[in-house]
Image (cartoon, rainbow, N blue to C red; front, side, top):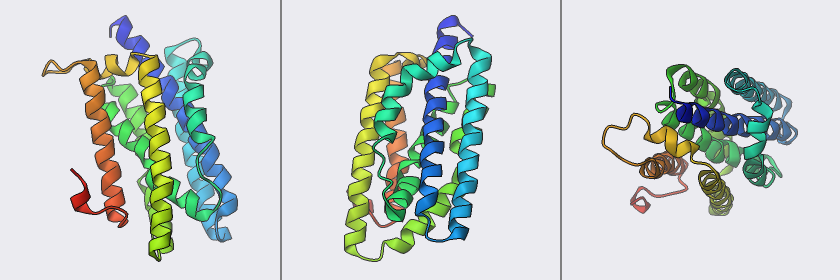
Length: 225
């Protein structure tokens, strides 16, 4: 692995690790909004899993650099700007985030993993992209709350806010460092630039998001172009 690619891998791992740490924080915070003790217990188990994913990413980062904390701190402002304003005021907003906001990170991890070395890619998939049970849990709970047009519109507004902030953070990270472009351009066979690959990744992630919106009846299939 070239030095440039190794440095890019470290930078991206730092971003993923800190993002996962904040994911654990908001998941644990939502436990108090669960409607009953059984649901709270299930959510607490998912919070434990989110923390385990963070530890896996953090430890992988620590094996790759002597300054893992400094690497995470460089990405901290972007993730704090997003997670500090995640709607987590009640069970409805929490389920909306877990069903439609958090899975964006899983899609990103899956899309990115093929550009990483095998070991790091496996870590990213295990940490970020293995959230299917959590996503089903949140989707099932959100679906029961989408009882009328008013609730559906509220969910759309929450998601629009989440998506706007996620895209803003993504653009900020891309503009601050070339790490993502370097990783995505490595091993590309069609001669595409790193910038082109970043756009392709964003499109792939958005496609997954739209599929979830359609499944919940929050978008129509013919709205997708």
